[in-house]
Length: 61
Image (cartoon, rainbow, N blue to C red; front, side):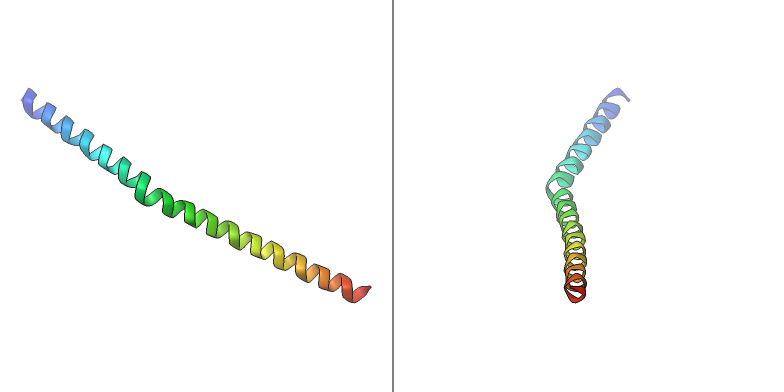
C-alpha cells in the first residue's frame, strides 16, 4: 500500500510539473499577445477620438 501511494505521489508531481511548464511556454505568451492586442485596440480608439476632436476644433476655428 505504501509503495503504491508513493508511486501515485510521484506521478501527481510529474503531472503538475508538466502542466506548469506547458502553461509557461504555451499559454502565457498567448495571453501576453491578447493583452497587447487589447491595449492596441484601446490606443487606436483613443487616437481616433483625438483625431476627430481636433477636426471638430479646426472646423470651429
